Amino acid sequence: MGRRSGVLEFAVLGLLHDAPMHGYELRKRLNILLGALRALSYGTLYPCLKSLVAQGFLVEDNPDVEYVPATALNGKRSKIVYRLSPEGKQRFEELLADSGPDAWEDERFGVHFAFFGQTDRAVRMRVLEGRRSRLEERLERMRGSLARARERFDDYTVELQRHGLESVEREVRWLNELIETERANRTGRPSTGGSGTATPPTTSDGRGQEAGSPDPSGPPYDRPGRSAQER
Image (cartoon, rainbow, N blue to C red; front, top):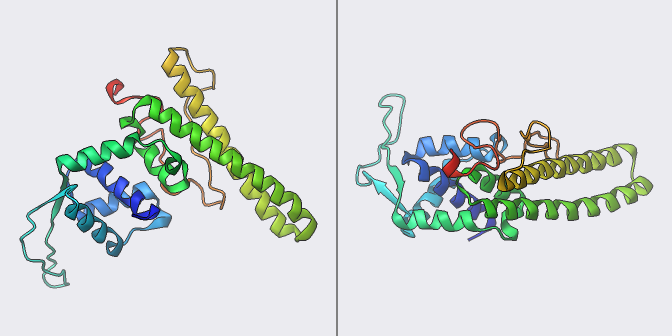
């Protein structure tokens, strides 16, 4: 399974873990989770759903109702409700426990962070520290690239690279705040990082909050460092 389809699988299983949904509602929730700039089409979602059904991770309720295309006259569309099977719940738990390098990448990290409220504290810490390490490696490359760009390119190209560098630096600072909060909560010490509420950084392409990255301050996400038992 490719990396992009793996991210979608994780997001689908995570949302259906909360409650069963039909495809239309699931697509709306996925567009919120993955970001408006990555609008998800039915042509992408339904093959994923069918694959998860075939693997035994999802169950279709009312699957035998004949599909009737919606028109201006009848407005009808059958609604198959998807819910997790026991195997699907186990698969979601496996994905939650994954703290390896794939969990540090841009899209996978954003989806994993969205389900941090259901993730073990030790796994959260490994994912955050891995993400920070990955971005620090990226920063080193970007700084070298910026130094070369100043000698070879015009001012606008240099400014674009500088903007990308600053965006990654902001995310590293954000991760530092999250890691500090996790450590403080684990030891029972009060956080020394100000208000303790971390604000997601902008992306390196200047589009604002990273596509797929949640807002830790509001629903449906929990503030970092808050376990499922604490909610």
